[in-house]
Image 1 (spheres, rainbow, N blue to C red):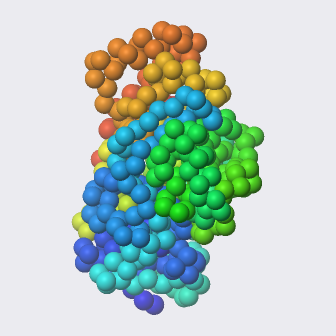
Image 2 (cartoon, one colour; image 1 turned 30 degrees about the horizontal axis):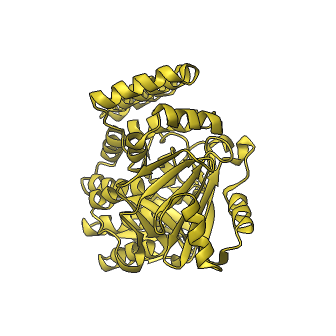
Image 3 (cartoon, rainbow, N blue to C red; image 1 turned 45 degrees about the vertical axis):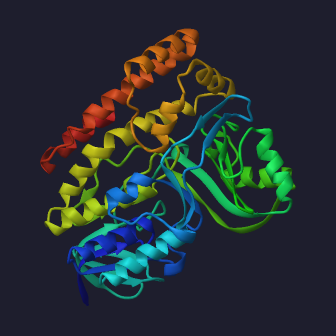
Length: 419
């Protein structure tokens, strides 16, 4: 039986980043994936906050891997005319196929062993049965995604907490008509046009011209009676003849619930989607997974896996749990509600930029006064908006108390669920 310090299950962004970090710290690491390695992880374009790469110790994307940066982002309520424009949002458009390949290559370069077409079957203490034979590892990092390997025991995500998203890069059948489409919405080529709330509060069609190609991202929660992201995308393509053939892309279900309160069970450690490390206000988990991978490396290099749970929850848990409150609130909003919140300034560039960067907004006195004035203009919505903000603030404070002593975790979890 082959022996390793750490076995990482899943060779997508979080798993490959963890394998690279662990190997760099001198831990003998095996990283496996049930798919071929060149098909592991996401196969489409994703938006990732720039700071996440720096925080994770991963070089920022460049060349063909980087498909967009520094462009304006336009949030449109429904199909308009209300719009919020962000001139600087600090988010990069990344070809995930190339990012995963780069992280896998980095892991190999640092000494990790990577094996595709290998399925994790069962864990027996420090022994892991796989479809390629048994292996032994002191720790097992489960980065197997929403489908999961079953190694990290956790209840399934409720259907009402699953966003089904689809993203495709398309050729342009008529470039002039494509530019005219964006011009009608007051958006320059290269900038993002995001139609929000078109199939209920939590739904988008996000489009951007990238040279002679069009990026289309759609997502919603079908369990709430909405069409899936793929169906929305197909309908958008069918209704706009300027869109040509598909180049590449993919679809997947994304867990939107708050982060798992428990990230370590014995010698098995949850990472990425398995850990619920997804910013549920817009369903992005790439940046969080990269940073969490570094935290796993730091903790295991010290031989103290629970330190990872403490570090991640105290720094990010409150923000991610708070924004899950925003997601749940947004699901209740109609297009009319969204429009009124925009007009009242309760949804504004400050809050939108913070959400894109996966951070809590920092509000000064002037902006706070404007929000209070705006709330007075929409009293019925303000009665729903106020309690949401109060719960968000409580969660931010509460998660900073994540116990450093694992023996106190069950008590903390009970309190978290009541909150």
